[in-house]
Amino acid sequence: MKTAKIGRKIDFLSTTVGRYVQSNPSIEWSWFIRVVGNRHCLTDIPALQENQMNLTHHAMPPRILLSFDFDGTLHHPASTPPISSDFWNVLDDLRDHHAALWGINTGRSLPHLIEGLEESRVPYPPDFVVAREREIFFYDKKGEWQADHSWNAACDRAIADLLRESQATMKKIRFLVEEKTGAEWLEQPGEPAGIISRTEEEMAWIVGQVESIVPTASLLGWQRNSIYLRFGHRAYQKGSSLAHVANHFALKPSQVFAIGDSHNDMEMLQRDTASMIACPANAVEEIAQHVAGQGGYQCRESYSRGAAEAMRHFLLDQK
Ligand SMILES: [Mg+2]
Image (cartoon, rainbow, N blue to C red; front, side, top):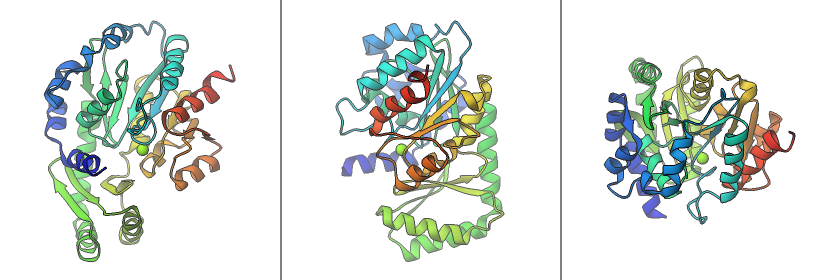
């Protein structure tokens, strides 16, 4: 448990490889895995080699866009396998027969996500990734990751400008965190401002304080996931990123499905972004209430079994 926490902390701070990806227009998936993990790569998995060809099999225009949060929604390390076969069965059906594209919308950086996908033995890469809740990457027909440079650069610029303008506010928040709590303040290139608390309760208290410190009109936003919090720009989060991805594929909100379990999923679980919204049974209370209030689908099952259940509910059972 302790190891996992440290691993996530390192990821939260680590941007070196992520920056490398952004500065290089085309990163080959298998090569990238080798750089990141120095272990066996995804293309060593036979199923992937076959299915990688299927990435180019989308003969008809996409009709459905599926957006999954990763940790706590798809990926559950205590389960074997971490992503259930039930999930892959439903996803295969939707990809093969309903022209569905799928992607991961996560707080993880791209390198850390790829490690998680490898650990989960995913049979084929996602069509898109939203990393760190705001950076967009597409997996192209050549089997390479392509950063959405204009979006990612605009996002970086907006956050840098906003943090510069919000120095006084950020100072107050940092002072509060360092003086009144045992939480850690994070600041480094590529991850300009974040917090890791000791407990979920401590983070809930910090969020309450942040809400009272940040002026209502400010564009300063924050994404909370358990004991982690990342500051950013309100315009760049999982929801706006998903809307951008949908627009890229010329899909309307009525064709978009999204599922997530935690606070940082709130913005993508909005009906004007994704008309089909859901949360697994293990979702935090605020997300479960939000999804119910929006007329979304609350799964009976947890994690990836919940994701499979929700996809069936919206896209297969009613057909
Ligand atoms: Mg989650």
